[in-house]
Image (cartoon, rainbow over all chains, first blue to last red; front, side, top):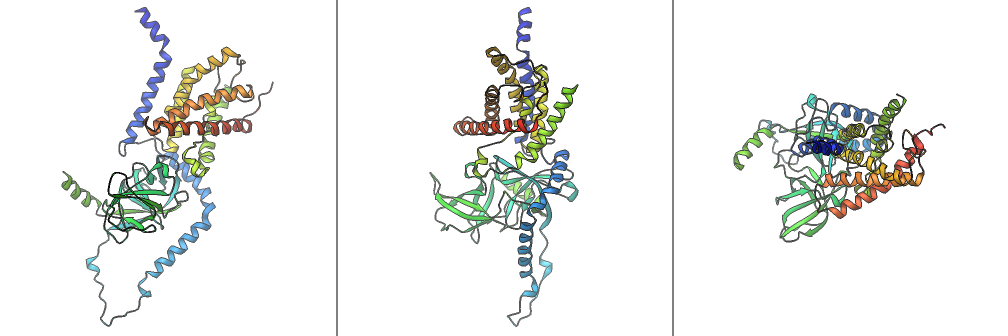
Length: 276
Length: 173
């Protein structure tokens, strides 16, 4: 018995170390489960407040760039305006607005923190439950898609960026219907994502645009992801492995929009019935 | 008492510098392989005469603070604990060869530079290996993990040494 106590006395430092490690591992493990991390993410109140304070000062640095982007976007929106069209046909135009109903709501937000050099990169934005943000809402900028929200607190939310090895999103080439899966290979580096699963008999060119399919209910159909940079055959299958250059530069993100799909719940419950 | 105040201030300043300056630096494609840390400097300089258990608890708090800001779950806390666990053994080993003077804290000023670099490199190797291993969570990527560990250790050691010359005050004797 005395020897046993002596033994424990000898290794008590090691035991203390192990106990603390186990406490930490509890945090690491619960993090990988979907949306389980409560206190330890940057949408938490303290660090969220801190990052928004930082952003107040650093956001001045790229105002010039931001203005340019906003101006081009304004021009684009003006072009789509109804007054720019002249009537070509003699038949009267009827706009039947009863057959349309709004499915997607866009909400502006500012990115207050953003990482690009990790395996699971995240983006923190300055809107949260107070603006009706929920998990799994799409994040886009005026150039293309960025990611989707995962953790939401009172005033902040964190989003998984496309540069995340857990990413899995259905995409299609623009104007085509063959579906591929978007994922990110860490070794490709920033701003390059990959698409797999498109059969090789589809004729694709370098420079083709890849857009979202809209099937997951997070993004509308046709939101731009990027353009094909390199195409090669996937080893051991008859599919393309496409390297896509994202249209968004992930190192510089400032103003984004969060997309709410008003029919998401309906879509999810329907798709769950099919999969069961 | 003076040591408690100095170390609390040092904790805050190092965390702020890590988040506001070091993490905002863009290293281009090298950023995938190099992770720069300066906040570990706090654990390296922690008073020698204090309890090793206190060091472990402080390391846990420091790591969890970093995890909160970096969105990394708990891997920084775990790696900090590992470093704090290794430190007493390394100190004992270094002490037996040529004795470390009786000082409150281990900075570049109180130690011989060459010895201090050896001490930092050894501890940082352990820190980064543990960190990247947890990040990948598999032994299959071992070559990449080792490469990242090596590069990160070299650059972080340089950063920490320069940081100590710039931030820490020379003790008056």
